[in-house]
Length: 149
Figure 1 (cartoon, rainbow, N blue to C red):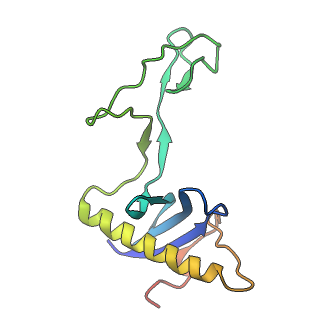
Figure 2: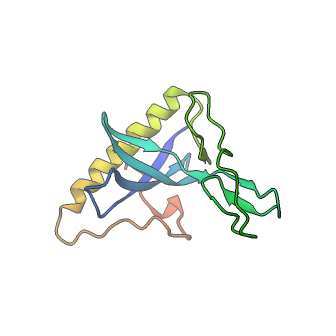
């Protein structure tokens, strides 16, 4: 797997733990969007895109996020212990949409994203800096230089 491009959008509020978002192109063929760059106790780390977990109302069958106290469809009160803990006993409220399946791949992705973040952060200090657009629907890696150029 070749990481063809990493595009970073720095978050305006640098006092927050969330430092930025990025999109990553793999093998000039596949894009992963909404990767988060977060400041942890050991430095920057990458959080892959995820979705909120949901279940269905026992009364009407409407779909609700697991933290919801009432059904968004019929208004019925929902049970508070609908969240099932993961293998480490933590409440699982989100599920990854895309994620690496081994440590080597995770390290490769994290290293590339953190490097791109630092490069973009340095660019952001320059006069006339224009932030990267990540939501460009017409985005094609052929339109941009690869990191190795």
